[in-house]
Image (tube, rainbow, N blue to C red; front, top):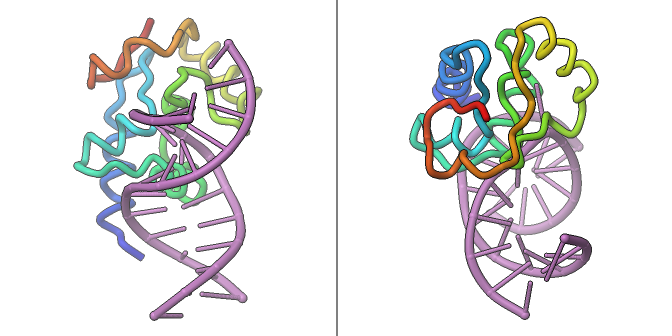
Length: 97
DNA sequence: CCCGTGACTTTAT
DNA sequence: AATAAAGCCACGG
């Protein structure tokens, strides 16, 4: 497998500060790729080792699966979930509404 | 080598 | 606003 790809994704996700979230596309863009699917693919396999709940869809909503579990993490970490899906494109950094 | 699949994104109709 | 199609990366069959 391309450990570089995996390593890049995991690194970016692990660097997301608490209370902030990044979209898959933004995470991919952080390491010079554009594959949100690649990121999601990595997450499905290696997400267990990274704060996957800090990675959300471009719409700002948690992943299609795990949304319920993600809310527990948000509640525990205090991550606000008021992303309306507007700021992610202009702000390529970890964002929070 | 080609096709399908997956925690996705974006543009166009 | 909602739906459709294309694009993207990696893996398995």
